[in-house]
Length: 208
Image 1 (cartoon, rainbow, N blue to C red):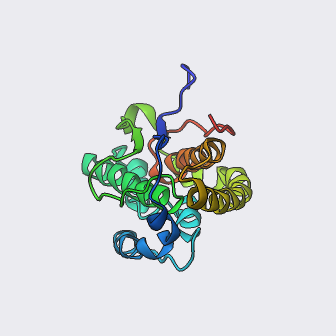
Image 2 (image 1 turned 60 degrees about the vertical axis):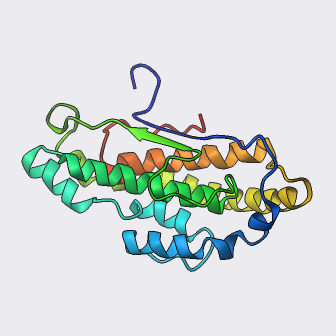
Image 3 (image 1 turned 180 degrees about the horizontal axis):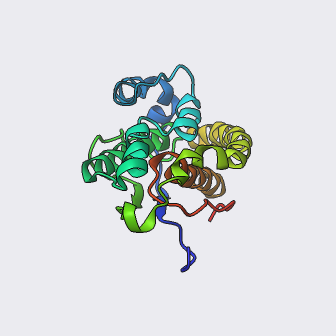
């Protein structure tokens, strides 16, 4: 991170407008079809709000982890189509999480970017990635898991407060929005390091 930026960038456009109160009020029910689709793609279950966040932070939400690890370890390669899958499934999962967190009242698209802006560069595995480090990245990231476990609790309460605020005012409090966005960014960076394996740069303990 010589230039001060992390290889994964993430942001969510703040909705500077009145959000749909009916959609917000019944969000958890409206999200069921897209959660089923995401669970089908990732092989995970979403039995409760927050389940998606926990699984995303813990195992990478259906990314090609083991195959990529083996290719980096034995062939020093990161197949391009595996990178494309990991990028698109991560973007889609984040659109669903943003919808669940009430940060956007548009139904999550399977292909359009909408309000979520997430990107990471295609890595040169032979030049930029240590072939042995993927074996221990998940372990090295344990301090982040502990911090994120606490932060997800904070996110839950922020979303609950935002739910009431939207129902009464139509607006998502910008301070709460920034907190939720920052925690999602933090989780995505940990995911990029430990499971997407697109960088050897250790994730910063930072909201920015």
